[in-house]
Every structure is written in structure tokens, then in C-alpha cells.
Amino acid sequence: MTMRAPSVHATLAHAVSMTPAGPARGPLSIDGDRLAAGSIPRAFTVDLRGHMLFPGLVNAHDHLHVNAVPPLVSSAPFANSYAWIEAFQEHFLAPDVVAALQRPKGLRMRHGALKNLLAGTTCVVHHDPWHQTLDTADFPVALLRDFGWSYALGGPSYGPPVQASFQATPPERPWIIHLAEGTDATAAAELSALDAMGCLAANSVLVHGVGMDDADIGRVIACGATVVWCPGSNRALLGRSLDPRRLYEAGRLVLGSDSRLSGERDLLEEMRGVLARGELDAAGLLRLATGDASRLLKLHGHGSVAAGSWANLVIVEDRGRGAGNLAGISRHEIRAVVRNGMPRIADTDFAAWFEAAGIDTVAVTLDGRAKLLDKRLATPALIAMEPGLQFKGASRMHLHETSFAMGVH
Image (cartoon, rainbow, N blue to C red; front, side, top):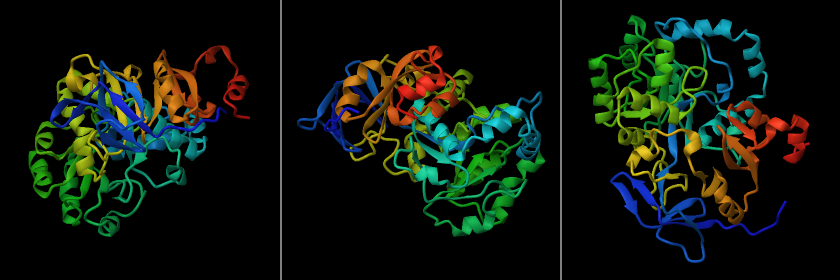
């Protein structure tokens, strides 16, 4: 391993930064793991003329440990989540699903995080029991912490009980639950049931909400609760999703990809689907996955390029499309993803920045495009789990040869 003194300071010069007020010019600097305005003397300079800087995206809903589990294929939409959960019980007996779930849970957690990072998501809301792997210093993404959750109002007993969990959650912290995930009377009744239990409040975060009607949406807005919109997962399982416009205009909506067990490949693919259907524009989608997610989920310091924010960034080419330079592209088109002030995956011409930051890299291809990946994220087991990601030239190498090349014995 090459020994060098890493630089924790970098000035990103000549780029356009995407702020809530729109594109802004002027240098942006990285001071350790935080952003700073202007230039830092003697910092490593990254010339980004012709590029735009976006905040790292926030995925408001994922189940990190099941992203490598083969999805359920259904010929008809389910009426509600409890019906598809029942169908999944048989699906979990399929040999390929059994094999996927036999991988260590910590490894599956890291894979789910890597999936998000590759697509420019640097912070994730994981809606499941906490796992010790999530606390490791080199975990690929930041996570929402100090929140309460229950799984759902009905169905199998899983996770903390609804009322007890809600009451134990401080009102200034988010409390998350799957709700109204369906199109039938069962789903339609859930918001009223939650309210009757005393669990509908300003800190309630309701995932999916497909079964809510206009009156329900009005109640959500009136009490200041939040809805997590997962349109890809909803359409795959339920045949439709909610209309996002009223919640979006009220500032009570965030965006989640759900896991690949039912949802899109990643948050960028989720955005591409929304744009294709004309449900929201690129600027609106970017707002959901940055500033609104930070505000509503109490993720202070995320979703912003303001000085003092976490140095989590997505760097893309400036093609004159504003927010559409990011919302609407695929993950291989991202030029670089920065997490905690350090490049983690980038095109090969960013090699000097990795070197200056003291990060050893591995040459990979992502959906056919050559990239450099932080070596700590490039274990053979993780690479093998992610479709479209492989060691460069891996098709000509056996696994033991790849492991030796990576220094894994």
C-alpha cells in the first residue's frame, strides 16, 4: 500500500452548484467532512469547469438487507400489502431466494448501501431492525438515526408494537410506519385507524399511502405529517401509486426507492420513471430527495451544498438542463460521488483526487463505463452481488485471481 499524507481539504473550482434558489457559481470547498464557501489555501484543487455539483441524494425508504433477493413476479396487482406479504412467504422458499438470504446479513446490509451510493445516494432511511454493521466506520452511506418505527398496523407480528413505539419516540424525532399500502378498503381505513390510536402527529412518517383519499391527504397536511412516495414499488405490487402533487405542493412529501425486492434499481431509476410519466418535473424530484428530505426527516446537514453541510456530493456534467442534469440520468453517467469529503466512486480521470485524498482504488466497470472505486467498498463478495458492477477485466479472471488482485486472502 502506498504511504502518503492524505489531503482532507479540496477546492472544487469552476463548477455550478445546485442550490434551493437555483444554479450558483463560485468555488465550493471541502474542509474535512464538511463543506465550506470559497477556496481554502493550499487545498487540492479539482477543476470542474463544465460540471454541476448536487447534494448527495437522500433515499427516504429502503430495506438495505434484501436488495440482492430476487423479486417476486406477479401476474396481477395485490389489493394490499398484507396480500403480497402472504405471497412472499412461498417466494422465500424458492432456491435462488434461499441462497440469497443465506449470505450474512451484514454483507447484505453493505450491499444495499453500495447500491445506493453508486446512484448518488449518500444518506438512507433503513426501515428495519438496527444491525451492528450499520455502525461500522466505513459503512458506505449515512443513515437516519435516533428514530422510532413500526412495520405496519396489521399483518405478521414484526418490529416494535405501534402504540408503544410511537409513545417512546420523542416528538422531535421521526416515527415511521408502512401505511395505507393498498387499493382496497383495508388500506383505505388505515389512516383513520392510526389516528384513533393517537399515532398520527407531526413526526409521523407514513410510507406509501396509496389507499389515502383526498380527505386523508388533507388530514396528513393539517397535522404536519410526512408521506414517503415509492411509486415504482407501488406500481409493481399494487398496480398504481398516489398522486404526489398535493402533498408535494404542501411540502409534506419525500421520495424512496424501496428495496429491489419490489422497487426500482435505485433512486435515479425511480426519478426516471416519474419523469417519463409526467408526475413531477426534475426540479421537484430533486427537492424531494434533498432539501425536503433533510427538513422533514430531521437529517440536518444533508441534502444541501451550503457551507457547514456534510460534504456529500454528486458531480455530473453540466448539459444545460439544471436539475435535469441529475434527475433523469442513469448511475453510470455520474462523474463522481463524494461521501464525507472523499471521492468514493468516479470516472477514471479523477485519479489524482483519489491519490491526494489518500484513497486506494480499484478499477471497475459500472454498467459498462470505466470507474475507480474506493478499495474498501470493493470486496469480491460485494462486487459479485451487484449486477452491472465488476472488476475491470473480471470476465477474464477467476474468483481466486480477483481476490488475490484485491489483496483478499
